[in-house]
Image 1 (spheres, rainbow, N blue to C red):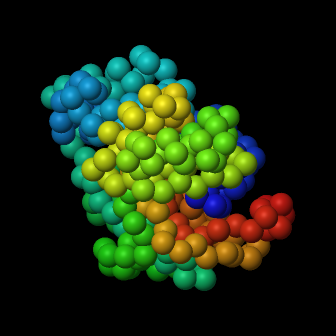
Image 2: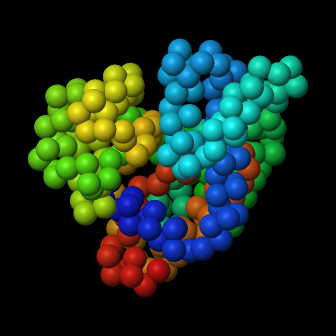
Image 3: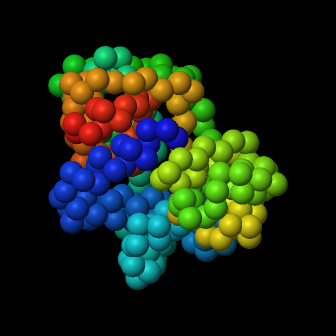
Length: 246
């Protein structure tokens, strides 16, 4: 997506990488455990677990950590997590979707609501902003995978619906139910992808000014620092001149 690579670069430059990495590993481990507990502990027989393991590997999570997370799912004392989605508006009415895995719904709801309120935004009802997003599969490739035409042809032959390319890489989109099939076909044509996951893709992105971008960054950072929050999705784009100032 235009903007999402720039946003990733901005986050990367912010520092505190060790703390961020530790938090990320914790969230990836939780998703692996939940996926394995809900289905088969064998990634080859469990599409959700396969995606979770791939996401972990894309972030260089050690194999022994992945294996421990899967084993934990089979232990009787493994926590029961509930999946829940929150939707709301951040500063300047920017739409935000928050997905969480929690063992305490009251705690998570209270925390997420307070984050939105303190940022000048507000938490809405389920469905209040998701209508402006499409639920799709996203498969990412680095720029070295090929030029835009080559990747586009491979994607269409694999059954994908759309491709977005820029100097940072390629993002291939497909129907949710086709993600595994399209991902496997693309790997046969282009090699292993950087990442393969389900996302909320905004139908329209809104460019923001510096002040709004700073407020949104603070809100998103706060949300992502919460142990219960797994993903945060938004519909804003950071123009090049604003990104340079950030």
